Length: 311
Image 1 (cartoon, rainbow, N blue to C red):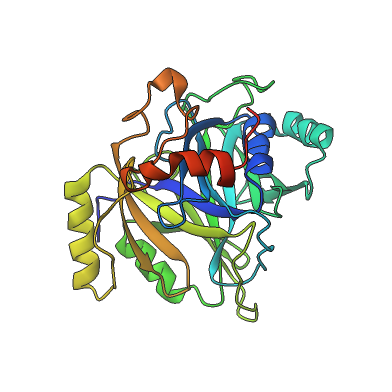
Image 2 (cartoon, rainbow, N blue to C red):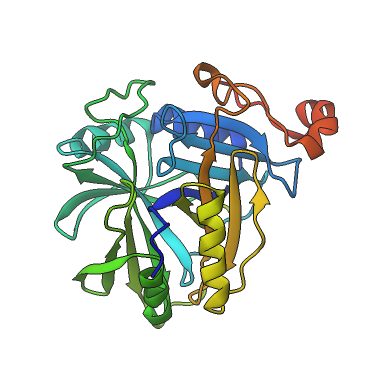
């Protein structure tokens, strides 16, 4: 069993409009945009990161907004919902805020004894807020969201699978333990991890396969401290038979990727070097930062391809 993985690092999804996506996460959810850069493989598309003040691992939601991308189709083999942690008693405030902003799909529920508020993003992205009693993370505040109700970071992620068996065994190998069940949902905990340490597997044997598009999660990333521990995890996965990419420099972390039995793309990302490696922490996410291989494209990207975000 691996001991190096500490919980979630980030979740990356697809969108159809950069400006709508940016407005939703900063103006509605009150998160900080901690990086404005581009997709390494498609530099004419933004890569936007939202989180707490510094983009602490376990708080960061990221997006590739492909202009006018078609909607994804929900189904099995995907991260079906991303769940954020908020303080106890905060959900009534968020319910009123969502009504003010016309947020779709708002619905209250109880999951494993915890109060949750489900809602949808601009592209039908599935989210929830979960009231958490013991989350001591310091939130980013602004845009009318005060510290007593603000999002702390990730609470958990939901995965929808036709068969959870192999994925459950993988999570256990990654250091997670099965702790609770509710109907067809099984919860896993990374004991001793960061505050984003829960994964819920939902089993739907007859569900059709998901089709990725705007509103779909592209991949989910798990956190390790540094490159040395990442290499340890990679070797252990390779030794167990997984097909894992070599480490890839993503400027703000190093990443390795592999596809899980249920179809979900997993990433293992380092906590170093962080989002303040090329910007002062007081100005994170303000300037367009380009990977060095795309630096020569700046003028074209800023004037022809990347839509203004109207900050």
